[in-house]
Image (cartoon, rainbow, N blue to C red; front, side):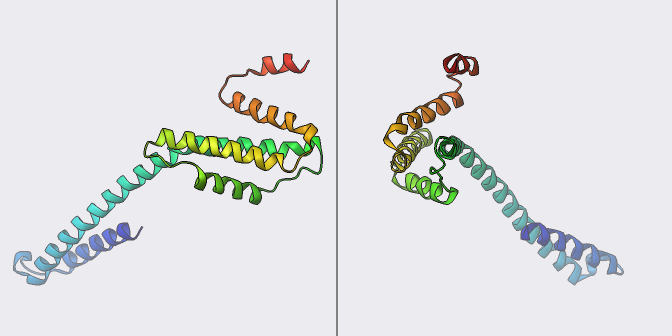
Length: 170
């Protein structure tokens, strides 16, 4: 980053000044001024680097908080994509899905508590993807589509084991 390079350049400049210094270092006014200036700038840069590090940690925590919404989105997209096995007419692009995803983010109820905000996003996303999918499939296959969504979401939450599903299918 810019600040790390600046810190490196300050150290390099200081070492160059020290190497070129002749005689008593304390009598060299330019060297003393360079030392003071370097110390001040280094403190500022170190502060900025610490602040950037803390900000990066905060961003990572916030991003992790939204991971359930990303997981739900991935599950719902693949349910839509899997509908092409039922009928080759059912083709959904990632671009169109992302429009539904962004729409759901914008339309979900805001909340200052992250857990509630995520739940609002999950509800809006699931409902909007369901409605989006249902507009393009035959009536006779809507129940299968609903079942697929429910099954995949329950599997993700570990509420349905593969053995149970195998038994159900047989």
